[in-house]
Image (cartoon, rainbow, N blue to C red; front, side):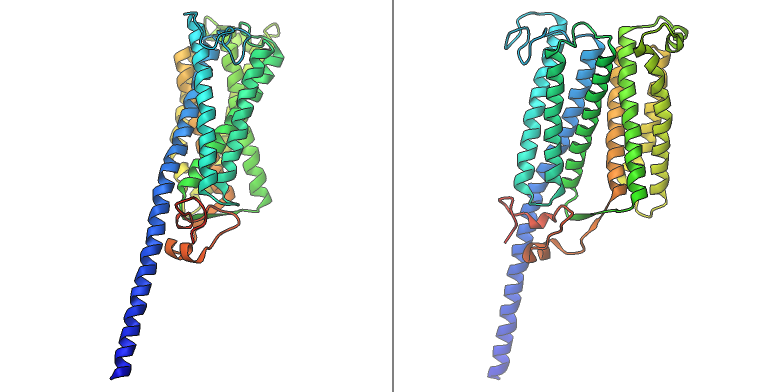
Length: 369
């Protein structure tokens, strides 16, 4: 009788201990979830904000407002706050202010990611890459002003090449920010690299081809702004005339790049459609690609009005982000760890290539005990 009572008491104590462990682990998981969701929302906000800043930068170029602050940087016409009411000055100064805010937001994202992740977590390093690329973006913009490349609208070939470099850096920046937001939002998923040389090379070349679309598109847009045509026939004649400026003859590269880049998108769609698990990003790609091609055709027919350029560019940026995320899904297989968050929090399981489960992040951002 006494032994039976002792056994029952022992079983009860084990149940209480087990219940307390589960409750403690559940608390860890809920705390980490509360911390992760705001960070993910903030990361996506930073992505959207930078898209808006880039679109406004294109508006600066399309309206010829790049010289609105003169040859001064970071001051505007030698003043901290410009007092001249000229429209070009307001447009250029607004772009500088919004770009400065972008630097602050990305710095906050980097610090927040660094505190909420641990060594080896992918969001940490993609946030670092985004900060470096944004700093380079600001440096390129400053150099454009300091070397007086923005006086009026520079028609030289070096300026066109410099514009391509700037736009390429912009695309890398958007990809780094979007990957940071996606990996933070992944929660309990881990990632493993797909080490297939063919797949890696094909994906890399495909992304480069899409980047070339954006670069040649920026050149075509610059040519439309500097050398406006009065009719579609005149615009086509300019593209193939030997007497036309180099910038106009380069416009023909854009539709060629669109055809090549579209082949990569079709290949990517075909590769994902053969899989049982289809990426969320892939379902949005066909619609976005179709809309972008339609906007490009209308842009040519209507001789590239500013409002249509401002519509064409954000769709192009969204298409690039979707392609970058879909390509990442192609290169890095993501799957759930199969270990409950409470178990991860109690055992301290971690992965070399991946974002740890949300339960593995404590209130202070370090590994939970």
